[in-house]
Image (cartoon, rainbow, N blue to C red; front, side, top):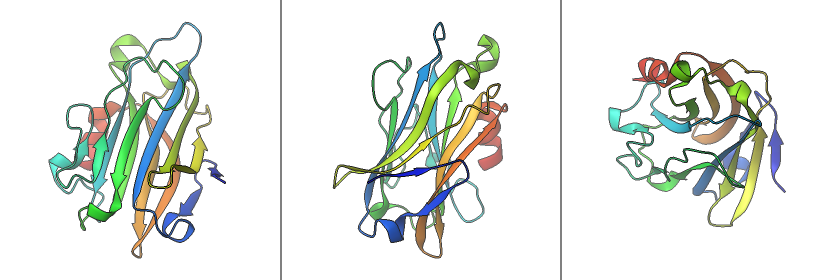
Length: 186
């Protein structure tokens, strides 16, 4: 049975799922009636210093795969229409660069400022982790709607602590846009 996390909650994936090697990180959302947004999932692959281990370890719609092949973005869904995950990130912990200590998953709104878009136009946003080899949902985190004016959001992150992988349900919003996050983590 999948674990449901609340904002700020975490789980030790290494202990809870000892054989977990390949996972799919699914991100989904629905638009409120009359809304139309283009959301973009991105992944910052960080070292101990919480900075990108190299520029190529920023995975997004224009750089779909990390240099080690461990993190793969499956592509940009520009409308968010349809059931299920709107954007997906595949992660293979077995081939992940040993310098990696954090995998940060963020979602930004394309041209948010110019179009006056924000997360308040969404509902039912979530992140989930699926064990690819067992085809089983491990955890779900439904984001609350407490960030209505934000234009970028850290949905969640995988952190390596003492050699063990933990998932943290972040739900931290901001208005600095994707470029603002790049400035922080580059």
